[in-house]
Length: 140
Image (cartoon, rainbow, N blue to C red; front, side, top):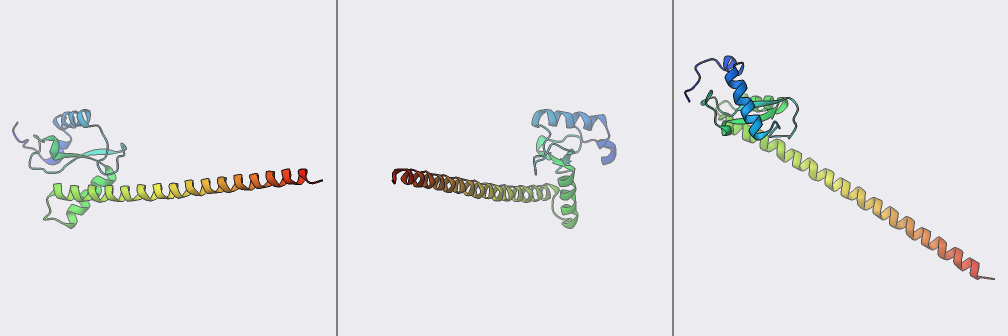
């Protein structure tokens, strides 16, 4: 397929891009690579070199927030290839999400352990009261 000879904006608004996007989403789903949300997902070009003849690997579904973040990162590092900027931003977001998930698991584990300890202590007190009551009944 030959490269499309039109402006980026005209291409993005074309039926050609609409079909390509639909094909991609049908094949891979519509979920942000960085955070996993399905809200406001946009199909990001990791390179403009193949515009109009994009391979699947040239594209990355990103939510609006992370799409904007990739382009902001790229503007801050103008010599960096867009694919590299995309990979860095997605990796950092995933690392942060993983770290947050690990903190949540640790917090939930601690809360679960605390709840089990409290329940254990409550049962121990109940057993002690029952023994004390039984001992009191046995005494004349």
